[in-house]
Length: 186
Image (cartoon, rainbow, N blue to C red; front, side, top):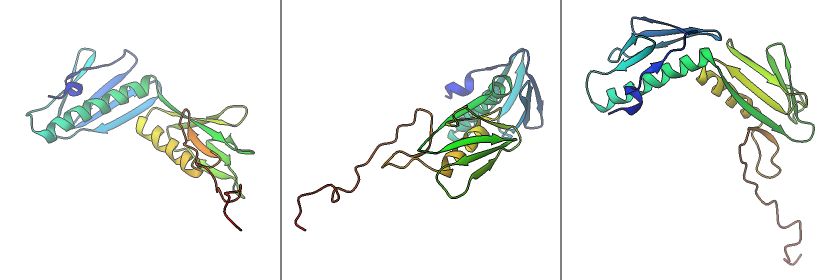
């Protein structure tokens, strides 16, 4: 029994939900999102809620039931409140800035790295150029763009330089012991 799938998704007054042939369209102040629904799953609008049901209890259908409900809930939250991911840039001389809809990163390469924002995604950088915020209505797209920005210069374990998620812990490794004086004969 899917506990997530059985919960109804509350729809705020500012959000409009349209159900068509196996697609759900959600409109809100932050944009419009559309999601295809598997033909086995039934989606209904009852009052101010969206109810997702399934025909039987086979494992594959149960998994689709919970997934569909979670995707719809994420869409409703995305168009009404939105999603953000914060990244932190660490390293001497490392910084970021926004030029139009493009994020420009100076992260120790010989050239600046440009990351273009797709439709529905916005970048912002604090005054120091150290904290990058990725925001948008689509939860999956926000997460994907944050991962792409992090992938430009992953945090390295020796000095900790690079781009990391806010609050991410990077385990530090010891450097070469031979340079310090290991006591080995020369």
